[in-house]
Image (cartoon, rainbow, N blue to C red; front, top):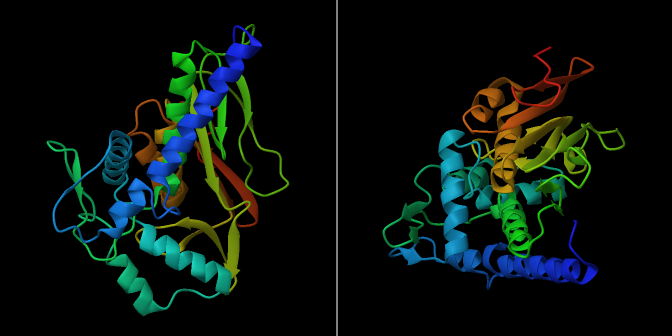
Length: 295
């Protein structure tokens, strides 16, 4: 971050952290007192529940992404992520009956948004909202807005791997950002970005092997199981909310179906890396720096 003075910079940073802490009280699915958790706990809602501006914006963005990705991203994936966490701890796939019950509370029609009253209905029993694929990106966007409001024109925010940058540092063409690699210990690709966000989703650091198959912590809402790997997808987008959600969806869709979906998001580009036939493969979509065609 570049500020007019040390004092101005410190004040701006404090304000940005305060905004992130405020959003944690709105969007956390671990805090039962958060607005999101209280909404989930009300499912099935007997009538629409009015929500605040931040939760509303996240849900609108999430539902828009779900529609554009044909359900590869779903903020209502909570019942499946909970079941998959248990599977990762036990080293066993979920029981078919439990998987079927969880899948019944996920998918189209799970979240209904009423824009006239800024309210939400969760009509299915057992629905649980999981903001893990979008909430951190939204918090980064809001924190950068706080910095900009305090006159900080050039800044970088790294929110657990969701990297968001504004104008380039003085005397440079952009911020140098290294995206996460396909495997832990490998060296990731370095990008130079300004006024953009980049997020990587993959299994380099969070994976489990069950019956000889490597599974990611990222859950496919359509199957209820983790994405198989090794795989990593990095997404560049104009904002961190989009980059965060789209990276999750692209990981689910993979290098075959993912590029077409990425193209539906203006200003977005992606890098798909995966292991196939004993060889590391890389494919990049139009707009990615140093674009590479399919192997």
